[in-house]
Length: 89
Length: 279
Image (cartoon, rainbow over all chains, first blue to last red; front, side, top):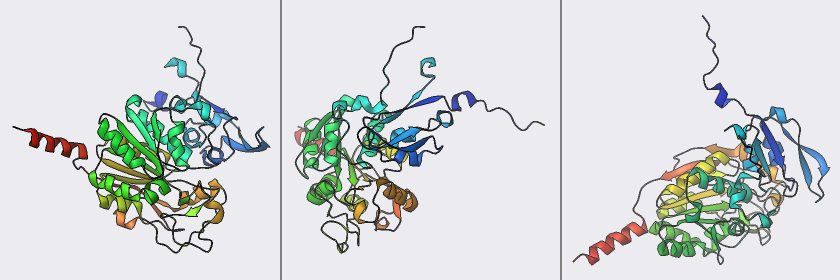
């Protein structure tokens, strides 16, 4: 007997490909997004931005699940996600 | 299918006065996430943004009214609630939100807070609690926990602080909740609930203040304060507001504490008007 089947709603529940946008003009380098990202997609680069703040960078776009925690947590409204399949909807 | 050329922006940018961003709050301030939660909660509660008015007082969180592209009013120190009362009674269709800090709502405007809760005016109060007066340099206030250091209590605070949910619930509020800015989803859901609920709704939001509060209390970065929230917070919905007092290093009980029904001031007024004008 086959106990495993493909979930019926896998197409709508599967993580959608996502692109992370970081607005360097707004970022003040608090590091919340890098610290609380559940997949370690974001990381502090150790470099300084042109304003003199610590910079955050994207390590691996492919690992992102699109949960949107970084977007909700950013105190500067400076990070947001764009779902690549937006046009299909 | 023609492909539209769109410029992507942050989803909450449509509610922000983007020409004023970046804002003046310090790196790691808790007011930013709380503002974002409120803006997303407007969408979540499916409110008409033209019918939402934001009133704020003085202080760091008082500047929220200036950054939000809704009908907003930046009032005098501590008088956000009286202004909001007038706004609500002048135009009962409006959904009035008071967005201010603990020094504004609880310290100088403490009397207005208990009387607004007593009269049960239909409004939502979001109180950002950062445990001190942040904008003026970190003086101790009525919410500073015992033994916490601040600019005016350099050896530790010896005054007992307010327990805000208990104070407001005892005064008669119909919805009382407390969250930290780390509980983003819960906070968003809670604000959406409070916006749609008739009656006086009070949400206390604990936010880090790294520059003046954290620096004196061994939490020098915003991240340290967030970590301490993560370790100390306990979600306990329906807890007795009496037992949710905050301390310097003790557990932070968060959750929705009170959710009751009570006639609002406007309902009582209409009832009385009907009774008096009946021939």
